[in-house]
Amino acid sequence: MNARSLSVRLVAWYAGVLTLVFVLLGTLTYVSLRQYLEANVLDNQARRARQIADTLVSRTSRDNEASLGAQVENLYSPEANDRFIRITRSDGAVVYASGEPKEAWFRAGEVPLAPSAPATRKVSQPQGTLLIAAHQMAGADGTRYRVEVGISGEGIEVALRRLLLMLALALPVAIVAAVAGGFVLVQRALRPVERIAQKAQDITQHNLSERLPVVRSGDEIERLSVSLNHMIARLEDAIRSSKQFVADASHELRTPLTVMRGELEGLAQDQTLRGETREALGSVLEEVARLADIVEGLLALSRLDAGETSERVRFDLGALVAGTAEQMSLLALDKEVHVSCACDGEVLIEGDRGRLKQVVVNLLDNAIKYTPPGGRVMLQVRAEGDSAVLEVRDTGIGIPPEALPHVFKRFFRVDDSRSREQGGAGLGLSIVKAICSAHGAEVEVTSAAGAGCTFRIRQPLAAPGS
Figure (cartoon, one colour):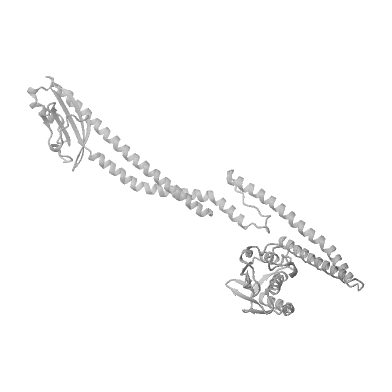
Protein backbone atom coordinates (compact mmCIF):
# COMPACT_ATOMS: atom_id res chain seq x y z
CA MET A 1 0.00 0.00 0.00
CA ASN A 2 1.52 3.33 -1.12
CA ALA A 3 1.07 6.68 0.57
CA ARG A 4 -1.62 7.83 -1.89
CA SER A 5 -3.86 4.80 -1.33
CA LEU A 6 -3.29 5.10 2.42
CA SER A 7 -4.29 8.77 2.34
CA VAL A 8 -7.44 7.89 0.36
CA ARG A 9 -8.36 5.24 2.92
CA LEU A 10 -7.71 7.59 5.81
CA VAL A 11 -9.76 10.37 4.22
CA ALA A 12 -12.58 7.94 3.43
CA TRP A 13 -12.58 6.74 7.03
CA TYR A 14 -12.41 10.31 8.27
CA ALA A 15 -15.26 11.37 5.96
CA GLY A 16 -17.42 8.46 7.12
CA VAL A 17 -16.84 9.15 10.79
CA LEU A 18 -17.32 12.89 10.30
CA THR A 19 -20.57 12.35 8.37
CA LEU A 20 -21.86 10.04 11.09
CA VAL A 21 -20.94 12.56 13.78
CA PHE A 22 -22.59 15.42 11.90
CA VAL A 23 -25.75 13.39 11.28
CA LEU A 24 -25.96 12.36 14.93
CA LEU A 25 -25.28 15.94 16.01
CA GLY A 26 -27.93 17.26 13.61
CA THR A 27 -30.46 14.67 14.79
CA LEU A 28 -29.72 15.46 18.43
CA THR A 29 -30.05 19.19 17.71
CA TYR A 30 -33.38 18.66 15.93
CA VAL A 31 -34.84 16.48 18.69
CA SER A 32 -33.55 18.72 21.48
CA LEU A 33 -34.86 21.88 19.80
CA ARG A 34 -38.27 20.31 19.25
CA GLN A 35 -38.48 19.28 22.89
CA TYR A 36 -37.30 22.69 24.06
CA LEU A 37 -39.75 24.63 21.88
CA GLU A 38 -42.69 22.39 22.78
CA ALA A 39 -41.84 22.59 26.48
CA ASN A 40 -41.56 26.36 26.23
CA VAL A 41 -44.93 26.68 24.46
CA LEU A 42 -46.63 24.34 26.91
CA ASP A 43 -45.15 26.27 29.81
CA ASN A 44 -46.61 29.51 28.40
CA GLN A 45 -49.99 27.85 27.97
CA ALA A 46 -49.86 26.50 31.52
CA ARG A 47 -49.22 29.99 32.88
CA ARG A 48 -52.13 31.34 30.86
CA ALA A 49 -54.39 28.53 32.11
CA ARG A 50 -53.44 29.34 35.72
CA GLN A 51 -54.04 33.01 35.03
CA ILE A 52 -57.58 32.29 33.74
CA ALA A 53 -58.25 30.02 36.67
CA ASP A 54 -56.99 32.53 39.23
CA THR A 55 -58.72 35.61 37.79
CA LEU A 56 -61.96 34.17 36.45
CA VAL A 57 -62.70 30.61 37.51
CA SER A 58 -61.93 31.19 41.19
CA ARG A 59 -64.82 33.71 41.39
CA THR A 60 -67.22 31.60 39.38
CA SER A 61 -70.06 29.45 40.75
CA ARG A 62 -72.75 27.37 39.13
CA ASP A 63 -75.08 30.36 39.28
CA ASN A 64 -72.96 32.67 37.11
CA GLU A 65 -71.26 30.14 34.78
CA ALA A 66 -73.04 31.76 31.84
CA SER A 67 -71.05 34.95 32.23
CA LEU A 68 -67.69 33.12 32.30
CA GLY A 69 -67.57 32.70 28.55
CA ALA A 70 -68.16 36.39 27.90
CA GLN A 71 -65.36 37.29 30.31
CA VAL A 72 -62.94 34.95 28.53
CA GLU A 73 -63.90 36.37 25.15
CA ASN A 74 -63.45 39.96 26.32
CA LEU A 75 -60.11 39.38 28.03
CA TYR A 76 -58.38 36.80 25.76
CA SER A 77 -60.18 36.74 22.37
CA PRO A 78 -59.08 33.15 21.61
CA GLU A 79 -60.41 33.01 18.03
CA ALA A 80 -58.63 36.19 17.01
CA ASN A 81 -55.39 35.04 18.69
CA ASP A 82 -55.59 31.53 17.23
CA ARG A 83 -55.89 29.96 20.68
CA PHE A 84 -57.91 27.17 22.08
CA ILE A 85 -59.60 27.73 25.46
CA ARG A 86 -62.03 25.36 27.09
CA ILE A 87 -63.45 25.27 30.63
CA THR A 88 -65.19 22.14 31.88
CA ARG A 89 -66.67 21.09 35.19
CA SER A 90 -65.49 18.02 37.02
CA ASP A 91 -68.60 16.18 35.83
CA GLY A 92 -67.52 16.66 32.22
CA ALA A 93 -69.94 19.43 31.32
CA VAL A 94 -68.44 22.09 29.04
CA VAL A 95 -68.87 25.52 30.57
CA TYR A 96 -67.04 27.35 27.79
CA ALA A 97 -65.33 26.37 24.54
CA SER A 98 -63.67 28.75 22.09
CA GLY A 99 -64.63 28.75 18.42
CA GLU A 100 -62.61 28.06 15.29
CA PRO A 101 -59.36 30.07 15.07
CA LYS A 102 -58.87 32.73 12.46
CA GLU A 103 -56.01 30.93 10.70
CA ALA A 104 -57.71 27.50 10.96
CA TRP A 105 -54.59 25.81 12.34
CA PHE A 106 -56.81 23.38 14.25
CA ARG A 107 -60.45 22.34 14.72
CA ALA A 108 -61.55 23.51 18.17
CA GLY A 109 -64.75 21.46 18.07
CA GLU A 110 -62.81 18.25 17.38
CA VAL A 111 -60.53 18.44 20.43
CA PRO A 112 -61.50 15.47 22.60
CA LEU A 113 -62.31 15.86 26.29
CA ALA A 114 -59.67 14.50 28.60
CA PRO A 115 -60.62 15.28 32.17
CA SER A 116 -58.18 12.71 33.50
CA ALA A 117 -55.35 13.63 31.15
CA PRO A 118 -52.06 15.03 32.48
CA ALA A 119 -51.34 18.73 32.81
CA THR A 120 -49.96 18.90 29.25
CA ARG A 121 -50.71 16.97 26.12
CA LYS A 122 -50.41 17.04 22.33
CA VAL A 123 -53.43 16.49 20.15
CA SER A 124 -52.81 15.51 16.52
CA GLN A 125 -55.24 16.75 13.90
CA PRO A 126 -55.13 16.74 10.09
CA GLN A 127 -54.42 20.47 10.17
CA GLY A 128 -51.52 20.04 12.59
CA THR A 129 -50.61 19.46 16.21
CA LEU A 130 -52.34 21.27 19.07
CA LEU A 131 -50.34 21.81 22.26
CA ILE A 132 -52.61 21.99 25.31
CA ALA A 133 -51.91 22.78 28.97
CA ALA A 134 -54.56 22.30 31.68
CA HIS A 135 -55.07 23.64 35.18
CA GLN A 136 -57.69 22.70 37.73
CA MET A 137 -59.27 25.26 40.06
CA ALA A 138 -62.19 25.30 42.55
CA GLY A 139 -64.86 27.90 42.00
CA ALA A 140 -66.38 30.22 44.58
CA ASP A 141 -68.90 27.55 45.61
CA GLY A 142 -66.35 24.73 45.63
CA THR A 143 -67.19 23.37 42.17
CA ARG A 144 -64.09 21.93 40.47
CA TYR A 145 -63.31 23.31 37.03
CA ARG A 146 -60.65 22.37 34.49
CA VAL A 147 -59.15 25.11 32.32
CA GLU A 148 -57.49 24.02 29.07
CA VAL A 149 -55.48 26.45 26.97
CA GLY A 150 -53.85 25.42 23.72
CA ILE A 151 -52.09 26.76 20.68
CA SER A 152 -51.15 25.31 17.32
CA GLY A 153 -47.69 23.77 16.97
CA GLU A 154 -47.34 25.14 13.43
CA GLY A 155 -44.89 27.81 14.58
CA ILE A 156 -42.64 25.10 15.98
CA GLU A 157 -42.94 23.05 12.79
CA VAL A 158 -41.98 26.07 10.71
CA ALA A 159 -38.89 26.66 12.86
CA LEU A 160 -37.96 22.98 12.67
CA ARG A 161 -38.41 22.89 8.90
CA ARG A 162 -36.07 25.86 8.62
CA LEU A 163 -33.60 24.03 10.80
CA LEU A 164 -33.83 20.94 8.58
CA LEU A 165 -33.33 23.06 5.49
CA MET A 166 -30.33 24.74 7.05
CA LEU A 167 -28.87 21.35 8.08
CA ALA A 168 -29.54 19.90 4.63
CA LEU A 169 -27.66 22.79 3.03
CA ALA A 170 -24.94 23.32 5.61
CA LEU A 171 -24.17 19.68 6.42
CA PRO A 172 -22.83 18.70 2.97
CA VAL A 173 -20.87 21.93 2.74
CA ALA A 174 -19.37 21.35 6.18
CA ILE A 175 -18.54 17.73 5.35
CA VAL A 176 -16.94 18.66 2.02
CA ALA A 177 -14.93 21.44 3.63
CA ALA A 178 -13.85 19.20 6.51
CA VAL A 179 -12.95 16.32 4.18
CA ALA A 180 -11.02 18.63 1.86
CA GLY A 181 -9.14 20.06 4.82
CA GLY A 182 -8.55 16.58 6.18
CA PHE A 183 -7.29 15.39 2.79
CA VAL A 184 -4.85 18.28 2.60
CA LEU A 185 -3.62 17.58 6.13
CA VAL A 186 -3.28 13.85 5.49
CA GLN A 187 -1.44 14.48 2.23
CA ARG A 188 0.87 16.90 3.98
CA ALA A 189 1.44 14.42 6.80
CA LEU A 190 2.05 11.46 4.47
CA ARG A 191 4.14 13.32 1.90
CA PRO A 192 7.36 12.74 3.90
CA VAL A 193 6.44 9.06 4.21
CA GLU A 194 5.98 8.83 0.45
CA ARG A 195 9.34 10.49 -0.16
CA ILE A 196 10.99 8.12 2.31
CA ALA A 197 9.33 5.08 0.68
CA GLN A 198 10.34 6.22 -2.81
CA LYS A 199 13.93 6.84 -1.75
CA ALA A 200 14.06 3.49 0.07
CA GLN A 201 13.03 1.74 -3.17
CA ASP A 202 15.81 3.50 -5.07
CA ILE A 203 18.56 2.47 -2.63
CA THR A 204 20.33 -0.75 -3.62
CA GLN A 205 23.66 -2.30 -2.78
CA HIS A 206 25.22 -0.14 -5.49
CA ASN A 207 24.19 3.19 -3.90
CA LEU A 208 24.13 2.51 -0.17
CA SER A 209 25.93 5.80 0.36
CA GLU A 210 22.62 7.61 -0.25
CA ARG A 211 20.31 8.34 2.67
CA LEU A 212 16.60 8.78 3.25
CA PRO A 213 15.28 12.36 3.48
CA VAL A 214 14.87 13.59 7.06
CA VAL A 215 11.95 15.91 7.78
CA ARG A 216 12.78 18.17 10.71
CA SER A 217 9.33 17.92 12.28
CA GLY A 218 10.27 16.56 15.68
CA ASP A 219 7.73 13.73 15.42
CA GLU A 220 7.90 9.96 14.93
CA ILE A 221 8.52 10.31 11.18
CA GLU A 222 11.74 12.24 11.81
CA ARG A 223 12.89 9.68 14.38
CA LEU A 224 12.02 6.84 11.99
CA SER A 225 13.95 8.33 9.08
CA VAL A 226 16.98 9.00 11.29
CA SER A 227 16.90 5.43 12.63
CA LEU A 228 16.59 4.00 9.11
CA ASN A 229 19.55 6.10 7.96
CA HIS A 230 21.63 4.74 10.83
CA MET A 231 20.62 1.22 9.82
CA ILE A 232 21.55 1.89 6.18
CA ALA A 233 24.92 3.22 7.34
CA ARG A 234 25.55 0.02 9.30
CA LEU A 235 24.52 -2.08 6.30
CA GLU A 236 26.81 -0.05 4.07
CA ASP A 237 29.75 -0.68 6.37
CA ALA A 238 28.98 -4.39 6.59
CA ILE A 239 28.55 -4.86 2.84
CA ARG A 240 31.62 -2.75 2.08
CA SER A 241 33.67 -4.87 4.46
CA SER A 242 32.32 -8.07 2.90
CA LYS A 243 33.03 -6.88 -0.64
CA GLN A 244 36.48 -5.70 0.34
CA PHE A 245 37.26 -9.04 1.94
CA VAL A 246 36.17 -10.97 -1.17
CA ALA A 247 38.12 -8.63 -3.44
CA ASP A 248 41.26 -8.79 -1.29
CA ALA A 249 41.06 -12.55 -0.87
CA SER A 250 40.51 -13.10 -4.60
CA HIS A 251 43.38 -10.79 -5.48
CA GLU A 252 45.75 -12.44 -3.00
CA LEU A 253 44.83 -15.95 -4.20
CA ARG A 254 45.54 -15.20 -7.85
CA THR A 255 49.34 -15.17 -7.45
CA PRO A 256 49.79 -18.44 -5.49
CA LEU A 257 47.31 -20.21 -7.77
CA THR A 258 49.18 -18.97 -10.82
CA VAL A 259 52.47 -20.18 -9.32
CA MET A 260 50.98 -23.57 -8.40
CA ARG A 261 49.53 -23.96 -11.87
CA GLY A 262 52.86 -23.17 -13.49
CA GLU A 263 54.75 -25.58 -11.21
CA LEU A 264 52.24 -28.36 -11.82
CA GLU A 265 52.32 -27.86 -15.56
CA GLY A 266 56.14 -28.06 -15.41
CA LEU A 267 56.01 -31.28 -13.40
CA ALA A 268 53.48 -32.76 -15.81
CA GLN A 269 56.03 -32.47 -18.62
CA ASP A 270 58.49 -34.69 -16.71
CA GLN A 271 58.67 -37.91 -18.74
CA THR A 272 60.08 -39.94 -15.82
CA LEU A 273 56.77 -39.81 -13.87
CA ARG A 274 54.84 -43.04 -13.69
CA GLY A 275 51.27 -43.35 -14.92
CA GLU A 276 49.53 -43.17 -11.54
CA THR A 277 51.57 -40.15 -10.48
CA ARG A 278 50.94 -38.44 -13.81
CA GLU A 279 47.17 -39.04 -13.46
CA ALA A 280 47.15 -37.66 -9.88
CA LEU A 281 49.16 -34.66 -11.05
CA GLY A 282 46.70 -34.04 -13.88
CA SER A 283 43.76 -34.23 -11.45
CA VAL A 284 45.41 -31.72 -9.12
CA LEU A 285 46.13 -29.44 -12.08
CA GLU A 286 42.48 -29.54 -13.08
CA GLU A 287 41.38 -28.60 -9.54
CA VAL A 288 43.88 -25.75 -9.44
CA ALA A 289 42.55 -24.49 -12.78
CA ARG A 290 39.02 -24.70 -11.42
CA LEU A 291 40.06 -22.77 -8.31
CA ALA A 292 41.68 -20.15 -10.52
CA ASP A 293 38.41 -19.78 -12.46
CA ILE A 294 36.46 -19.39 -9.21
CA VAL A 295 38.88 -16.75 -7.95
CA GLU A 296 38.65 -14.87 -11.25
CA GLY A 297 34.85 -15.04 -11.06
CA LEU A 298 34.79 -13.76 -7.47
CA LEU A 299 37.19 -10.96 -8.38
CA ALA A 300 34.96 -9.99 -11.32
CA LEU A 301 31.87 -10.00 -9.09
CA SER A 302 33.57 -7.90 -6.44
CA ARG A 303 34.58 -5.35 -9.06
CA LEU A 304 31.04 -5.26 -10.44
CA ASP A 305 29.59 -4.87 -6.95
CA ALA A 306 31.94 -1.95 -6.42
CA GLY A 307 30.64 -0.35 -9.62
CA GLU A 308 33.94 -0.76 -11.48
CA THR A 309 33.31 -0.56 -15.23
CA SER A 310 35.18 0.78 -18.22
CA GLU A 311 34.04 3.88 -20.03
CA ARG A 312 30.64 3.39 -21.59
CA VAL A 313 30.55 3.62 -25.36
CA ARG A 314 27.89 3.48 -28.03
CA PHE A 315 27.99 0.31 -30.13
CA ASP A 316 25.87 -2.15 -32.12
CA LEU A 317 24.75 -5.04 -29.91
CA GLY A 318 24.00 -7.22 -32.96
CA ALA A 319 27.57 -6.88 -34.26
CA LEU A 320 28.97 -7.72 -30.81
CA VAL A 321 26.80 -10.86 -30.52
CA ALA A 322 27.58 -12.01 -34.04
CA GLY A 323 31.33 -11.55 -33.54
CA THR A 324 31.28 -13.41 -30.21
CA ALA A 325 29.29 -16.31 -31.72
CA GLU A 326 31.84 -16.60 -34.53
CA GLN A 327 34.73 -16.66 -32.05
CA MET A 328 33.09 -19.49 -30.09
CA SER A 329 32.17 -21.52 -33.19
CA LEU A 330 35.08 -23.93 -32.64
CA LEU A 331 33.75 -24.85 -29.21
CA ALA A 332 30.35 -25.54 -30.77
CA LEU A 333 31.90 -27.64 -33.56
CA ASP A 334 33.76 -29.79 -31.03
CA LYS A 335 30.40 -30.63 -29.40
CA GLU A 336 28.59 -30.95 -32.74
CA VAL A 337 26.18 -28.14 -31.76
CA HIS A 338 24.87 -25.79 -34.44
CA VAL A 339 24.96 -22.07 -33.52
CA SER A 340 22.92 -19.51 -35.44
CA CYS A 341 22.68 -15.74 -34.97
CA ALA A 342 20.00 -13.34 -36.22
CA CYS A 343 19.86 -9.58 -35.86
CA ASP A 344 17.06 -7.26 -36.99
CA GLY A 345 19.16 -4.40 -38.28
CA GLU A 346 21.35 -2.11 -36.20
CA VAL A 347 20.55 -2.17 -32.47
CA LEU A 348 22.55 0.54 -30.72
CA ILE A 349 23.13 0.55 -26.96
CA GLU A 350 25.52 2.25 -24.54
CA GLY A 351 27.65 0.34 -22.06
CA ASP A 352 30.91 -1.37 -21.25
CA ARG A 353 31.60 -3.36 -24.41
CA GLY A 354 33.96 -5.79 -22.67
CA ARG A 355 31.54 -6.56 -19.85
CA LEU A 356 28.60 -7.05 -22.20
CA LYS A 357 30.71 -9.35 -24.36
CA GLN A 358 31.37 -11.38 -21.20
CA VAL A 359 27.57 -11.72 -20.80
CA VAL A 360 27.27 -13.15 -24.31
CA VAL A 361 30.24 -15.46 -23.74
CA ASN A 362 28.86 -16.84 -20.48
CA LEU A 363 25.36 -17.43 -21.87
CA LEU A 364 26.66 -18.97 -25.09
CA ASP A 365 29.16 -21.13 -23.20
CA ASN A 366 26.40 -22.47 -20.94
CA ALA A 367 24.10 -23.11 -23.89
CA ILE A 368 26.78 -25.05 -25.79
CA LYS A 369 27.95 -26.91 -22.69
CA TYR A 370 24.51 -28.25 -21.77
CA THR A 371 23.17 -28.93 -25.26
CA PRO A 372 23.71 -32.52 -26.46
CA PRO A 373 25.39 -33.25 -29.81
CA GLY A 374 23.13 -32.46 -32.74
CA GLY A 375 21.35 -29.73 -30.80
CA ARG A 376 20.92 -26.08 -31.69
CA VAL A 377 21.74 -22.75 -30.04
CA MET A 378 19.98 -19.65 -31.42
CA LEU A 379 20.97 -16.08 -30.68
CA GLN A 380 18.68 -13.20 -31.65
CA VAL A 381 19.04 -9.44 -31.23
CA ARG A 382 16.13 -7.11 -31.89
CA ALA A 383 14.67 -3.78 -30.86
CA GLU A 384 11.36 -3.71 -29.00
CA GLY A 385 10.03 -0.23 -28.33
CA ASP A 386 12.79 1.64 -26.51
CA SER A 387 14.64 -1.52 -25.47
CA ALA A 388 17.24 -3.79 -27.03
CA VAL A 389 16.49 -7.49 -26.54
CA LEU A 390 19.02 -10.33 -26.63
CA GLU A 391 17.72 -13.89 -26.58
CA VAL A 392 19.86 -17.02 -26.23
CA ARG A 393 17.83 -20.19 -26.82
CA ASP A 394 19.02 -23.78 -26.85
CA THR A 395 17.62 -27.28 -27.24
CA GLY A 396 19.58 -28.63 -24.30
CA ILE A 397 18.66 -30.45 -21.10
CA GLY A 398 16.86 -27.44 -19.63
CA ILE A 399 16.40 -26.39 -16.03
CA PRO A 400 13.75 -27.83 -13.66
CA PRO A 401 11.04 -25.33 -12.63
CA GLU A 402 11.99 -25.49 -8.95
CA ALA A 403 15.55 -24.41 -9.78
CA LEU A 404 14.67 -21.40 -11.97
CA PRO A 405 14.39 -18.86 -9.10
CA HIS A 406 17.92 -19.74 -7.96
CA VAL A 407 19.94 -19.92 -11.19
CA PHE A 408 21.43 -16.44 -10.73
CA LYS A 409 22.62 -17.13 -7.18
CA ARG A 410 26.33 -17.51 -6.63
CA PHE A 411 27.67 -21.09 -6.58
CA PHE A 412 24.24 -22.51 -7.37
CA ARG A 413 24.10 -25.71 -9.42
CA VAL A 414 21.30 -28.01 -10.47
CA ASP A 415 22.62 -31.30 -9.11
CA ASP A 416 21.50 -33.57 -11.90
CA SER A 417 22.81 -31.42 -14.74
CA ARG A 418 25.37 -28.90 -13.49
CA SER A 419 28.05 -31.34 -12.29
CA ARG A 420 31.60 -30.53 -11.42
CA GLU A 421 32.83 -32.75 -14.25
CA GLN A 422 31.47 -30.16 -16.71
CA GLY A 423 33.69 -27.52 -15.19
CA GLY A 424 31.07 -25.09 -13.94
CA ALA A 425 31.79 -23.11 -10.78
CA GLY A 426 28.27 -21.73 -10.38
CA LEU A 427 29.41 -18.12 -10.94
CA GLY A 428 28.78 -17.58 -14.66
CA LEU A 429 25.11 -16.61 -14.38
CA SER A 430 25.82 -14.57 -11.26
CA ILE A 431 28.30 -12.53 -13.28
CA VAL A 432 25.70 -12.14 -16.06
CA LYS A 433 23.17 -10.85 -13.52
CA ALA A 434 25.68 -8.43 -11.97
CA ILE A 435 26.74 -7.01 -15.36
CA CYS A 436 23.11 -6.56 -16.42
CA SER A 437 22.25 -4.80 -13.16
CA ALA A 438 25.22 -2.46 -13.61
CA HIS A 439 23.88 -1.54 -17.07
CA GLY A 440 20.27 -1.09 -15.97
CA ALA A 441 19.25 -4.21 -17.89
CA GLU A 442 16.85 -6.99 -16.92
CA VAL A 443 17.63 -10.67 -17.39
CA GLU A 444 15.13 -13.50 -17.16
CA VAL A 445 15.08 -17.21 -17.94
CA THR A 446 12.35 -19.58 -19.04
CA SER A 447 12.90 -23.30 -19.22
CA ALA A 448 11.60 -26.78 -18.56
CA ALA A 449 13.58 -29.92 -17.83
CA GLY A 450 14.49 -31.64 -21.10
CA ALA A 451 13.05 -28.85 -23.25
CA GLY A 452 15.94 -26.40 -23.42
CA CYS A 453 15.93 -22.89 -21.98
CA THR A 454 15.80 -19.28 -23.08
CA PHE A 455 17.72 -16.40 -21.53
CA ARG A 456 16.32 -12.98 -22.39
CA ILE A 457 18.12 -9.70 -21.67
CA ARG A 458 16.32 -6.37 -22.07
CA GLN A 459 18.41 -3.19 -22.04
CA PRO A 460 17.48 0.44 -22.92
CA LEU A 461 18.47 1.55 -26.39
CA ALA A 462 21.02 4.30 -26.80
CA ALA A 463 19.52 7.78 -26.86
CA PRO A 464 19.21 9.18 -30.39
CA GLY A 465 22.16 11.34 -31.35
CA SER A 466 24.19 10.45 -28.25
